[in-house]
Image (cartoon, rainbow, N blue to C red; front, side):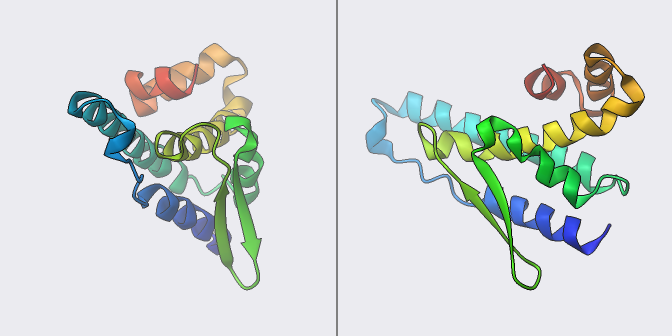
Length: 144
């Protein structure tokens, strides 16, 4: 994998591995707090699967990933500063803890969609490819 792509992916991974910052006072009870926490953890698991699907594809470039930042309303931006310094900037829509991992997933899913588009030709074929490689739960969640 080229260095630039690696740096971008590692910056995304660091972003996703950041603590969500849930505040219990924003929830009416422990049940809703834990439910939200499980959903956020599921987003992290999805990211890891999408990350692994992107990382080993040598023909997928850093530019492909950067182009995919238009996903999730373009709220996740990857910025390159100076000598191989990559930063992730995320603009919150509603509530940061429930969004920032979803945004990273959407970017990687969009990059994979574009990557598969040349071979698959139709959306249904891309969804079948995603289902075969990533499983039906992940495919139905990110490749609809």
